[in-house]
Length: 306
Image 1 (cartoon, rainbow, N blue to C red):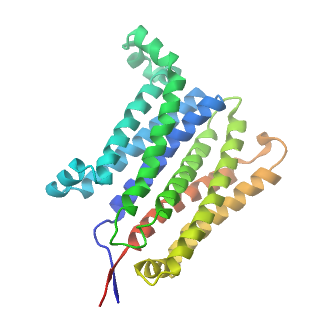
Image 2: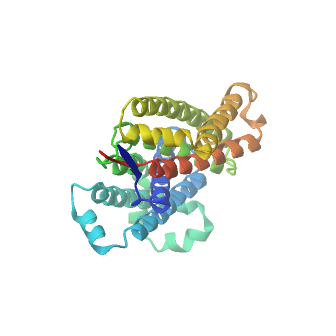
Image 3: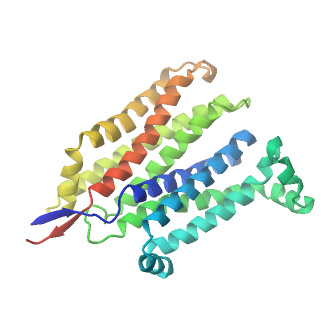
């Protein structure tokens, strides 16, 4: 039996998958925190604008990979293609994010000339339904985050991808990177609730990392006991020092240790916590999330019966 690495999707698609999951999860988590925690509106506006930026850049990478006109036309007009549904999810996301963030921009003097050009009745309406937009936006962000895994898992010729575990892994990883990015942003917030929000984000990311480790264990256990390309893919990843050292150890275990220490032994007051461990943990989670997508694509193998 022969196994051959796929040569269709490379780092451009991995970048799109990473930024899509990061952007969708950042918006979803920000919206939920707005609804239940009352975050700093400036921090929320930066978070949502950065999530829009992530999706825009990610989409550019996707389009760069789809420069073949026939390939792009087929994918974008075929309802059986996850790219078709991804375009719908992303448009839903962009509309929700823009409607949600406009009232938040009033907090910034630099955006005042733009805000003043919006009719007051419309601005009042957007402000009135801002929390409703947050609720819709959280759903939009979740759809974008999980879509990145559904896109890859819909490849039946690659056993390692064609499993329900992959979308679940990608969505949990996406939300972990989103929480890590928001944790970074919270370090620069001057709001009185910033330390409380940081503590909540630290706890959320630790729980997501534990969940991701459980899913990884189930995923690789499933792959290793199949005499197919899935097993060959799993063995390829286990033999990669950068995957084990960069993603598994540096991108998961080290941030989990740092965040667990901060949660249980970081002091009774969040004000006492040093920003350096949070900065390190968040950066490693983002780095690990990108490596995960790079190596999942690299490990994709076609199986031939000869």
